[in-house]
Length: 444
Ligand SMILES: Nc1nc2c(ncn2[C@@H]2O[C@H](COP(=O)(O)O[C@H]3[C@@H](O)[C@H](n4cnc5c(=O)[nH]c(N)nc54)O[C@@H]3COP(=O)(O)O)[C@@H](O)[C@H]2O)c(=O)[nH]1
Image 1 (cartoon, rainbow, N blue to C red):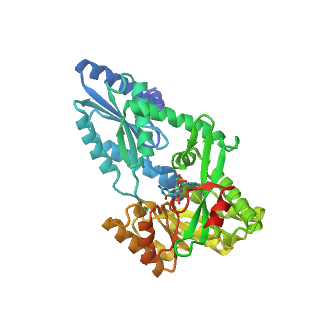
Image 2 (image 1 turned 90 degrees about the vertical axis):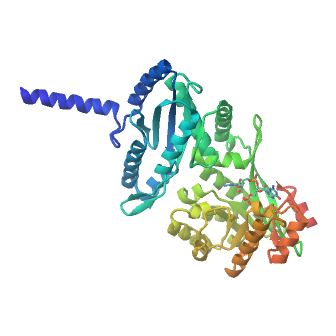
Image 3 (image 1 turned 180 degrees about the vertical axis):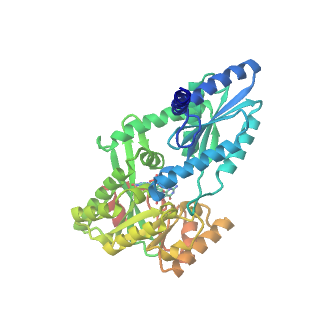
């Protein structure tokens, strides 16, 4: 009899635990979190206090799972939950509401400055490296914050607005926190609208490629062309790739888009080849996400076979983001491309992570100096020094070098004097459609 009762109690406890707590981290789940918010709202209302609801999302958690496996991913979530709990105060509620999504409720807040202070403290603690099974994982977080009563007076509203603010933090580069503002609502609606149209852009034939020439500034000869994606939607108008490419990455169809670009660009370059148009290599941008998650080598192989374009006329542009993680895998992918005869350029060079040692081991052919440096030439001391150093580095490593975003004669002269002769930018031509490019090449 005694044992029956204890067993029943144990079973009840287990059921309650499953209903209200997350099994992996033992934190309250979404249901219990909502109950706590509801209770806290009543107290905050009575005492005329503020409270803050944090929506916390781990940046690039999926990559941890993909690269290190789910066991390490789970341990990371447990350590993260522990740290988040340790950095909160008595009376606060920490919860796990989904895969890598956590929430935190801070009660008894009087000023928004107190909330920001608390947030800075928490972010600092969370971003210290996590040491798991011999791996040092550097994880950052994107946090959105909604404050009662300004940003919502019930749990749904606060949660929705904290979520919107969290997406804003992701949009502006992750690793930050954002307090909700009403303007974000409009931004979030615009984002959803773009996303819903983007899903159909390929099917509705709304994508097109433009081409921008890369010119030898001394001889005027066209050395290559870069394919740049354009999207025109009848309702949204022209949408910049700087806006929709990150969305396509987030929505999971960047590989499909990159493959389409690759196909069109190779087909077009082969057509120009047949027409005897001498415009060097065609450069195609590949997103870092596609680089790691898609099958880039197979994609390039099949497109080259289908288009009949000689491999040496194709250049793949990758960014430093491709090498932050899984350097060995990245080297292997680039090596396979090189073995096929395809050239590889490192785009936006100088803006990524600081370690240059990877340059010596990566099989790349070209460095593209980022336009943000060129824009400040020739008068800005810092940018002039960096640009000169990048040119010297490329020369020492026997790499080709291309300057991006060249707009003035003064920039061109600066670059030529330092040994960078290939340039791309509005000084020569803006990106144009396939029909217009031959005229630019003939006039060059
Ligand atoms: N994965 C893919 N990414 C792509 C693809 N097409 C473009 N992109 C990436 O989107 C970002 C924005 O591109 P875009 O608006 O096309 O801007 C490019 C040029 O048009 C612009 N440019 C060129 N010359 C000048 C100049 O003189 N002044 C000036 N202000 N801007 C100039 O610079 C952008 C160059 O892009 P990149 O060489 O790739 O850095 C951009 O990050 C693209 O990479 C795609 O098909 N797939």
